[in-house]
Length: 154
Image (cartoon, rainbow, N blue to C red; front, top):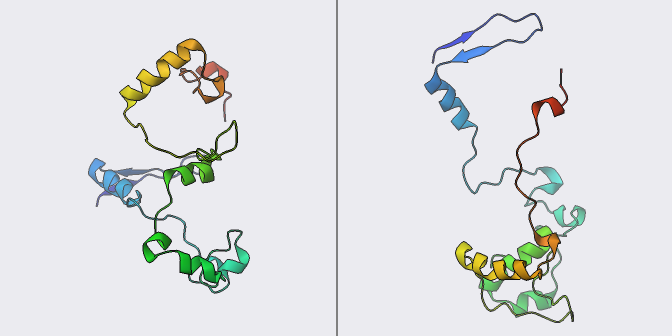
């Protein structure tokens, strides 16, 4: 690999020049593999630590005390099932789609529409009638701020 180290500048910085192919190879090495957990825990926070359940708020870990009824009622497939998207919405964004806002009753999800064209056909008439609250709208797309409005960082 050929690179050139330039002498330090007056401010003390040093510049390194790479061949384009070498630069891309080094840059690609920094990109993590897909579906890899980037956070590693050690000590009592490690996944196999006996004390993890005692020190984490969720009380998950190898040393967790499980009630006897929990393991008896669930099949092995149910124990290892992935979290549903409704539970993920509740956990991440605090949006509870399984509870009715009006009566606080349970809502059963019968279908999920994922086609953007079909979603637009449903939502456009509601927006025209003013039935959709503004809280659920994304802000309008705008250009980045003008350069003179951004303070200099020097």
